[in-house]
Image (cartoon, rainbow, N blue to C red):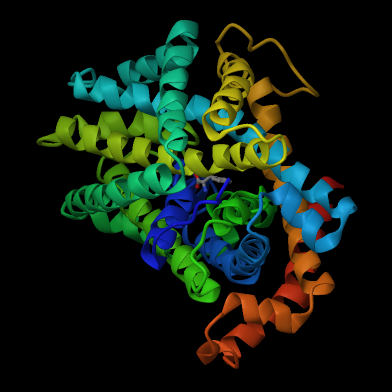
Length: 446
Ligand code: PHE
């Protein structure tokens, strides 16, 4: 079986950006920034992207393209059998993320549909809350929408890397970008919008919480799709001559830009209507419909906003699911369609447990170590497996692979070989990244 590849550097960029941009940018980033005091948190977040996010991303790109294999076989090829454990950890983490991510994607799909149907016309805070609670606690509804979201992802993946992932991201990413710009223009032209901008960008360190640093680190991993083998898998499809350094910079920058654009669409609107920016996970689902319903053409905007969020969630899920699909294809020698089918069934099974375990739904009484099933999947992946994966991946590339080999793979064409930036980056990768993650990780655990 011949391994597929993306057809150009631009396709590589769009697909990878598609993986990075997701609920992490549009749902998590705004509410987490809101709960951690705005600008100061943003500052910490940016440092995490520079010192940890970009170096780990480059390491994953290196591993993927060098071997052109799925994470399990890639680690085995470069480091021997025992390193394949890191690949398996990635597969488990990507599945755990999918279990709850697909549930939230289902809510977003259902909100897109509801806003198209005009369900939010004239909502008040009470009715908006009610719609949210009804949406996430209706067992049949959540599972139906979750399965629809999974089927969309399965459909694209079944068509392969070029015909599926590449084609879908080429169409969807520009649409996402245009939709977010429209929402931004509307938000910025509201009265009082400056308050929201100030909230997002003004740096006040006294507002940071003690947990904010780990939160920022976890968010940078999650947002940039790191630590779970997604970037290794995508990089295994990259073109031969793609400059990995530039791609990682472009992706990290664009991902941050889109998060900021999402923040700019949300916070000015929140402030213009005197709502709380620290509303938590409900920010997107409760606050926004309420606010948009008060704007002229608000229902159209609301539909656009949820459509763009659905797109973002879908392109991110493509990469999460592809990690396991590539594994089944190459390790278990099962063809693409069957692999997609198997992985989708596994996710639907455990994912529905996550969806049903949300507060107020039928399985909300089931607790694992004091947490709901949904929160357990989230905690295990975001707080444990992602940072652990990050430490192992960066330490592996930093200490077990010869420096020249890494440089050669990263900047195939010679022009960038002696770039100072690349050298600094490799130093950071070796001496700062793994240690920093380790320190923050240990501090959080004990
Ligand atoms: N980066 C995606 C987001 O921001 C989530 C994701 C995490 C995707 C890990 C792939 C791997 O929503």
